[in-house]
Amino acid sequence: MKVAAVVDASVAIKWVVEEKFSDAAGTLLTNAALCAPAHWQAEAVNAIWGQVHRGRLSAEDGRQRASTLISAPVEPVPLAALFDQAFQLAVALRVTVYDSLYVALAKVRGIPLVSDDRRLLRRMMAEPTLAVLARPLADLR
Image 1 (tube, rainbow, N blue to C red):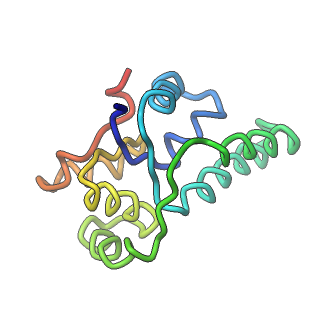
Image 2: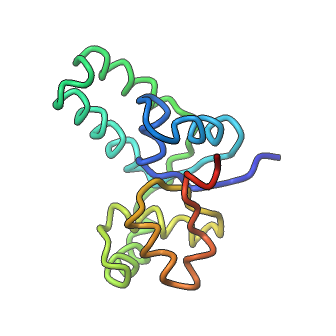
Image 3: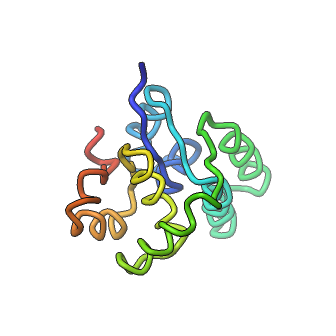
C-alpha cells in the first residue's frame, strides 16, 4: 500500500518544471497516494504561467506542461469541507487561505503535508499539533 500525503503547488510544479528537488517530487508522485485541495491545479498552472511570463518557457511548452500537470494522479478534495478550518488556520498561522487549505486537509486526514514552501513549513513547525504533519520536500531526497 502506498503512503498517503497532501502535496501543494510548490511540489506539483516540480513534476513538469526542472527545479531543485524535482527528483524527490517525482519519486513522491510515483510512490505515494496523493491528495490536495481542489485549487492546487490553479496554483500550479499559475506557476507555469509565471515561467512563460518570465520567458523561461514558450507559451506552447507551458500549455503542454499545464496539460500534463492537470492529469497528475492527485485526488482533488472539494474546498467547501475545508474552509472553516482553513480560515482558522490562516489566522492562527498568518498564512494565506490558499496555503492553509493544504494544512487543513493534512490535519483532517491525519497525513503529512509535503511542501517546498519554507515559510509555510516554518509556521507549521512552530505549532506542535501541526509540526508532526509538516514534511519538507528536501527531506525526501
